[in-house]
Length: 116
Image (tube, rainbow, N blue to C red; front, side):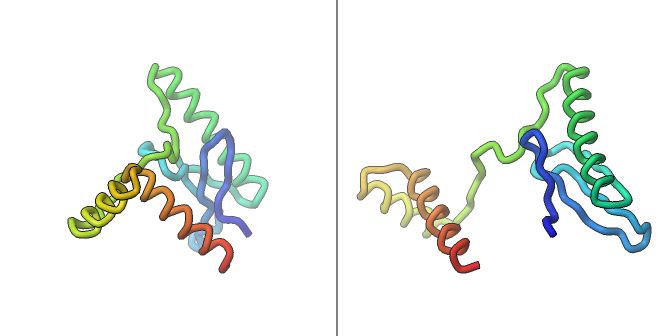
């Protein structure tokens, strides 16, 4: 079972509350808090999609841009030594630190995907 839903580029979690006996979730990877709940698989999916639509409508009504999940950039704090090593590596190869980090991350995730 997947624990993530996707709709209009937004990702939502799905969790079960034993106490309330409902499925619930929230939009992931955005700053705004948007949550939803449902009694079953169809209900949680419909509630998630409605939450996305409501969020987008609210942002439009307020005249503000909605948060976009996973925009394509993030901060990494590898520490001084690793930062220096990576920067020198990039310089020696005539490339950018961003390219080095992106390539390393891609290789790591591709390797991990094949192992799973």
